[in-house]
Image (cartoon, rainbow, N blue to C red):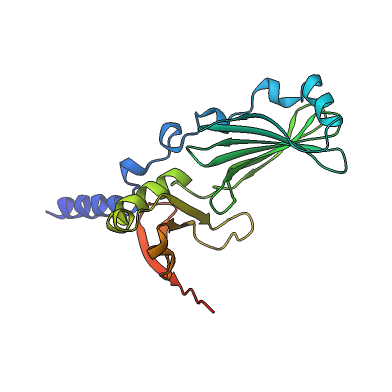
Length: 222
């Protein structure tokens, strides 16, 4: 009886702290296998044709802009160049910064609703070697896509009622604030009726995927 009780306590303890299987981080669920999250060999240095076009051009250079993907280059006054690639379906941007000689300087992955850094930021030297990586999901078991998927289940009625088409995302950055808990905050983009309501923030535990609570941001109109 005593051994059975110890076993029961151990099982209960493990269940309390385990991550739900459906919310375990993996590349398929988090879309980390998608090209928007990968850096190819060709992207390590700007090809000479594109570099020359940008040097002779004052405004943006748009190579692709369709319903699924946009690829745009922008030259800064100091000669450096940013390549902003957007996966419109995932609402994810890959922003690659190049030095004026065309060598890669850094890359960031952005969730565009809220313009939040996710996954990681990678820095390179002139030879294309990685010198620094900032992990924006440090301390998290639940990735950006899983947090949104969890909110889709929790807020299903509101999503249908208010014709929600988008999700705004932010999270606690443990690199800047190491003493805070990993937490995702998600808000909804709905119809005109929903925009008149107080903003509801869904808070999700970044380790377990547990729904913590909602908070409200009061909207005032003059």
